[in-house]
Image (cartoon, rainbow, N blue to C red; front, side, top):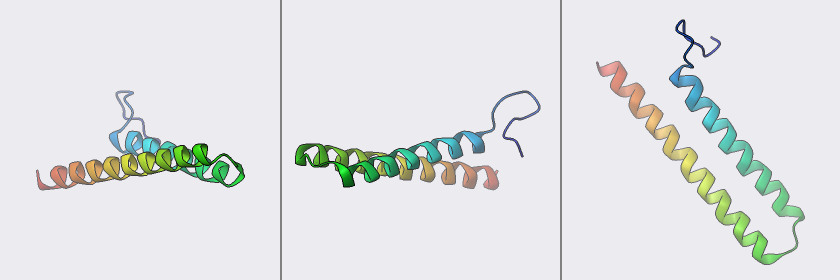
Length: 74
C-alpha cells in the first residue's frame, strides 16, 4: 500500500503514520542532543520538549485507534 488512494488523496493511515514517525524522530533527536549539551537550562527545555512530543504522539495514536474502532463498528 502506497498510502495514496485512487482519487489521489493521501490515506488517513499514512497521514497518522507519518505524524507519529516525525514526532518520534524529533523526540529521539532531542534526546540524543541532550546527552552532549552541557547547559542545564537547555537540558530542562529539551526535556520539556520531549515530553510535549511524546504526549502529542500518544494523543495522535489514541485518536487514530478510536477512529479505527468507530470505523469497524459502522
